[in-house]
Length: 299
Image (cartoon, rainbow, N blue to C red; front, top):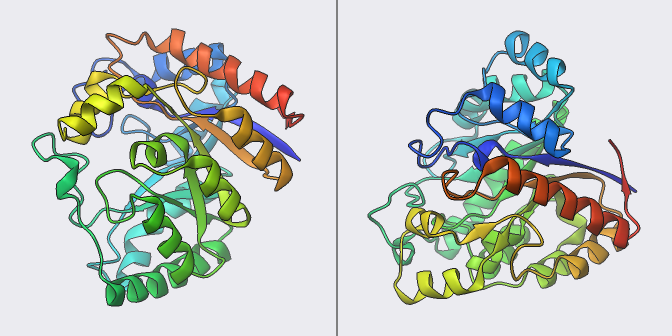
C-alpha cells in the first residue's frame, strides 16, 4: 500500500469565489506547493487546459497532475451528451497520467451562490435517484475504458450532500463509480467521515483532506449561512488543524489498502490564511499521519 500527497489550488485561488486570490499567478501556486512538500496538484481555474502547455509547466516544478473537477449535468443531459461534454477534460487527465476524475453533479446546485443558504440545496426523489445512478454508472464505465475512473465528490449545496445521499449513491450505482471521501464536506453535512470510510471503503478511490473548525461550523449552521459565507468565515482548514479524527480515518484507509492520492483541499481566504503556511502545515500533518498509520508515502 502506497499513497502520494497532493494539493488543490483552492489554498491560493478559489474557483467558486474567484475574487479570492484573483491576483495570485499559477507560478506562485505551483512553486509554493512544491516547496510545502506536495508531489502533485489538482486542476484549478488558472491551469492551462492543453496537455501540450500544462505538461511542461508541471514538469518544470517536478509535479504530477492529480485530477481535476468536472461539473456534471447528468440530471439534464443524456449519457451521450455528458460523454461529449466531458471528452476534452477526460483527454487532458488521461494524457497527463491522472487516474481519477473528480466528478460532481451540479444541476440546480447552490454552493457557488453566496445569497442562498444551504437549506435550499436540491434533492432527488426515488425515481430520479434510480435513473441518475444508471446514467452515472454508464458514464463511469466509459471513462474507466479510457483509463480514468470517476471519483464522485459529495459536496455541500448539491444533490449528493449528506451521508444518506452518499449511501443512496452507492446503492444506485455500479462498482465503476468510485467515491471521493471528503472529510470536511461530510462533517459539515452532519455525517461521520469515519463511518463513511468504513461503510464504503471498497469504493473509495480518492481522498480530499480538509478539516473543520467546529466553532465556525456551529455558527454557520445556527445562522443557516451560504456555503461561500461559511468559507469566508473560515469553516475549513488543513488536516490536523480542526475537529476531524484523522488518525482513525487513516487506520481505515490502511486496513482497506487504499492506494492513490491524499489531497489537501481546504479553501480559505488567502489574505487571512497565508497559503504557504497552511500548505506546509497540511503537508507535514499528512506525512505524520501516514507515518503513524504505517502507510507508505511515495515522493
